[in-house]
Image (cartoon, rainbow, N blue to C red; front, side, top):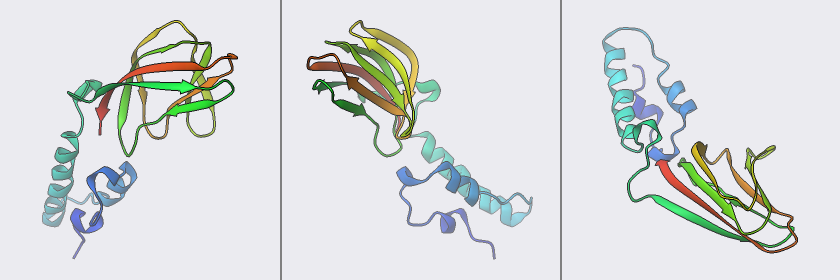
Length: 152
């Protein structure tokens, strides 16, 4: 007897299930009675996971915030979602000339420098691609980043 999706993903919290685990668990592709029963599991899981996000990156009500980071001269700070969260960055502003970059753990891609406010429409971060702020201005800087949570 083939294992069910529940057997393959047992003892995993919904927030820790990865796309790779789902793809591995749903590798059944034969069309037979067992497969139909099997696919009811992934469909149920997909429906449960859909309730954790809003379509098209819309903000989840009551889960928007502003992160205020005070950064000493020569120091860095990061803004990184936890778990499997996805955040949509709305705006960035700083009190001193700092560099704000997207960071994947190995490489930076600068998205903002200076003090002028920057407004974004489709800048998303998650635990593997997050924001790092570096202050080399000579003064302490406060960087405020407004964001909406769009996925849990």
